[in-house]
Image 1: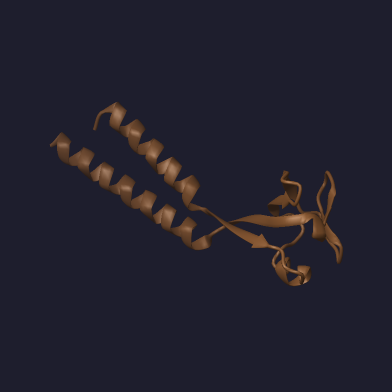
Image 2: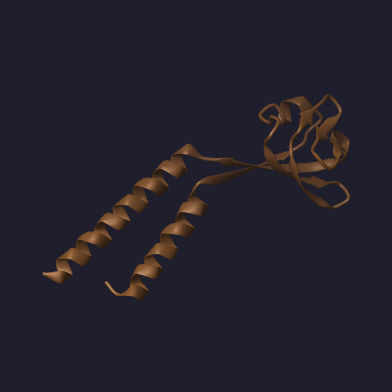
Length: 116
């Protein structure tokens, strides 16, 4: 296997691994804010779209009956259009690790086979 092919394989594996490990969920807030945000917790990384069209990257520090607070500001529920939650998917992470292992094993086997 040439150096160029090894670099391409490594690049593909890294991109697949990084893309394959996260999932995003978008919450559109109904009148029942507590129900919509019941899966959020302090430390979660979220994006908040407010009704004025602005997007805010927020690390949740606190949830209250009136809104969500991050390190920079608090956002009242009536001002929030939607919330996008990024989370690590255990299934996707496992699939990425197994896929990487199989790809590297196949590449190593092909490399050894071409030497003899």
